[in-house]
Picture 1 (spheres, rainbow over the protein chains, first blue to last red):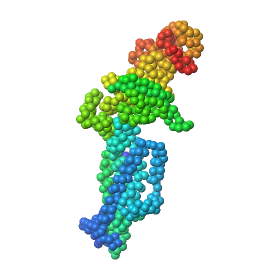
Picture 2: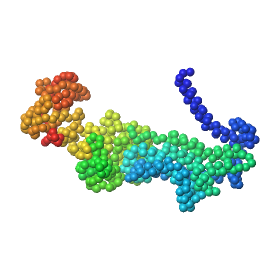
Picture 3: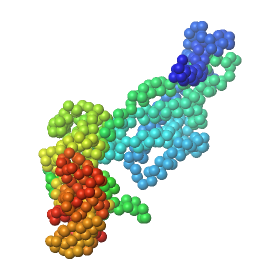
Picture 4: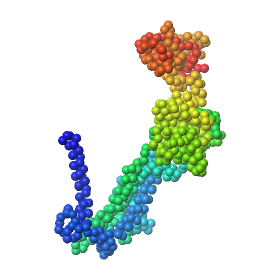
Length: 284
Length: 356
């Protein structure tokens, strides 16, 4: 065996160990969710389930109890959907427009403004909890999904603006000038020239925002009411509801359900992300 | 439809206070309808800024700008009825060639059938009909250049602006596209302003050339005037390749036979003034002559095919002489040089300005 093969072996070993490290918990969750109570109590964490038992999934989805409420994760799941979808779309749209202005229509003080926005990316969100709850109360949006949409849109804006602004800075100014001479205005240039070139960054931002907002716990637990809890809070409450027996299979199924949409978004948008890179057609 | 362009007293200052930089210092140029004006100069001379001001992409600090008699200061680029070809071509990467060419017409709400007809006309003129469905990324440099020109032509504007359009092409393609631009200008007859730093492009394309340096218009004239009668040593040195030779010395009298003496030699030439002057002499107007008194040593022989340039080291520095390719001169030879009394360019040694 020569040195090249040896180094290749080393690389593959490291990769396999890393993959193993990340996949084992998922494997355990999956097999546990498919086992029944007796098999779980038998103790072997890594063993395959003796039969495919999807009762735990059905239970987790529609009839597991959180306190006295036994409707499963379903209401929380739909809360999360109706929170995440508008919040992702709003924060991405605002980020795209902000980035377009801050890179191609600079005005006096626009760089300073961008500096302040950058600050928002690094600001710990705990800092805004109290003032935000004041604002939500003032707007009569406390404990509502609309309130959560607003909070997430605002919190995500700094990051999405940064993404788009940095991406658009690489687009040559001559392109905008050419469109101006051709007679296109601010919005026309945006949606006819700039947006069609934005597929990769749009996908990155959508994945990033959806993952962040769907997985958020802090805002969810702080600003939601009884009927507006997102799935992360619902999952936590369900797993912490004490009863005589701990239903590990139900908890595992619920955790997978809670994580599934982000994985799905990754699989669906990830491929666009890879192939969506626009051909560099500007310079010869 | 050819329109005149009137540029008067244009100033442009970037920055404020101590950091203010005046990139254009009162530029006055009048361009006649159908003329092909070249703005030429080294980078940073303000030529691109002037072009952007004409285009409306930048506003002048001061001055007057009229296209076809109409004051366009403060008017948006789209309203000026101008088309521009950019250095990077600036083709819209996500649109097909046809959509690129038709975009300006679409923005002006030209009906689809008229638009399609016009796109095909322009494409035929530029021989790019077979490329109409492609994306810019699928085109070669020369093809992109043609599409960029097609985009400008499609609208039939009052004024064409070119911002160093050939600088991204290789040498062969550049010569080809240069001829193409000249042909299109003849066909369309549209008034054109063309920015370049390439003096050969300037000489071959322009009906008039404006030479700029440090935000100041140095000279404006036909290629022949600029070449034969440069207004100062800067223009004299900038235009022409190889560059003009400069010899600074003292003229002892004026008239048909003054003695012009300088470090390492002297010549009998008709100098217009006495005292310290600079003689500018192009390589083709200096001749090698075995029995001449002004002598030097050959340091370089450069054959270009049609001509051979001989570089001679003299008391006033290196002098370039154009010789026929049959020349037998070798590096290290000592040669003599003569200068005829024709084609002498005399400049004031202090101000560098031309002496009539």
